[in-house]
Length: 150
View 1 (cartoon, rainbow, N blue to C red):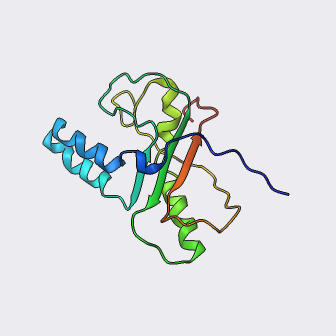
View 2 (view 1 turned 60 degrees about the horizontal axis):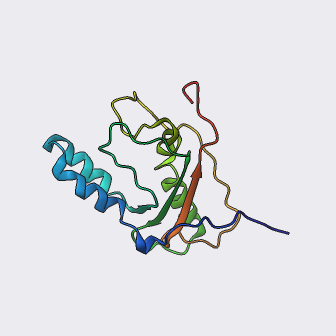
């Protein structure tokens, strides 16, 4: 026996703007001192396409559900080792967890309202080795609880 959650009703990745492109649009609006950091963020080896991208310049974003969907894939073709694909998926799994937990609080990440933040612990289960991290995958995140600094 096996089962899984239904695929969320979201647009395909081809219909969405890449995270790197969204960051490039922000560059002219930022001080020169911040542009290098933006370039570094945009150059990660992962392509991400947010279904509902945050407005990173909004100091008071609207309250939203603690759920987020992002299409992700490694930009370059990987070898066929399932270990490489699992490691890649684990690497990109950490990129938006904190932002998902902040959505119901009306806070973007980064924000002057926040101090230092880090993702200390999350888990992944690989139920199959039949996925490729260099092909589009929908990363669906849900933060069921946040509080007490956690």
